[in-house]
Image (tube, rainbow, N blue to C red; front, side, top):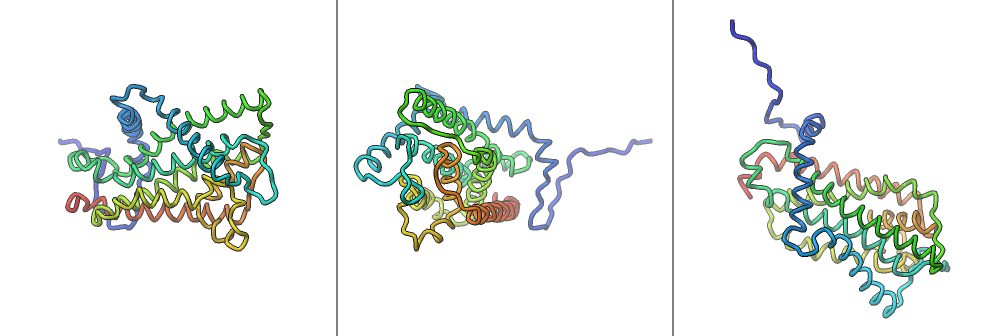
Length: 290
């Protein structure tokens, strides 16, 4: 008598708009780890300095921002009007640069998910959402290296007496801020990746759009630069509360508005789940268009 076979994996063509099997994603955690290693090593492959670029890049960008926006343009580094931040402008620009660098890098990498991975996606089955997840996690390695570097420089500034920096209770929000940053950048990235399978012109606009978005966010200047009548509109940018809260957490001074931060969280969740829906829809037919 033939024994009944049991299958560990069931592949179906579900018609539901969103069908994310989190158990299946967990089952493929080893593949996620492999993709994370692949993405991180390939990023610095055949470079002389290797992973040191994760440290050099934010330092060089911070130096340029300090000279151009700090010394030459003399833009304010205060997030609250009338407030004088007792810290080197270098640290102000560095935390903003590190935060934005992760966001823009993850958006850019995930916006090419289907195009970059079409060879392996067309040959082997695995949950396609694993790829953008791995990309976001791989970029987190560089992010945490840069955060450790930032903390080290801030500690030296405190010890030497260049500035007195006081950590605030908002530092408890740091894990939530990082998670929000991951979800927002991943959501935007996979929305773009889903759309670029049909509209390749969109891929050409990603770099320009991110550069424009950076200057519309309080990265090269403090929030106090924004006129009061436009502040409410400006705070609807979901990146703005993340950056300002990050500065408040590490410096002890800055701006935090619970209403606009909650709006930022809601926008992040909406963007992320809209991205999942589009990703789930496009992954079934992307091989016909890519």
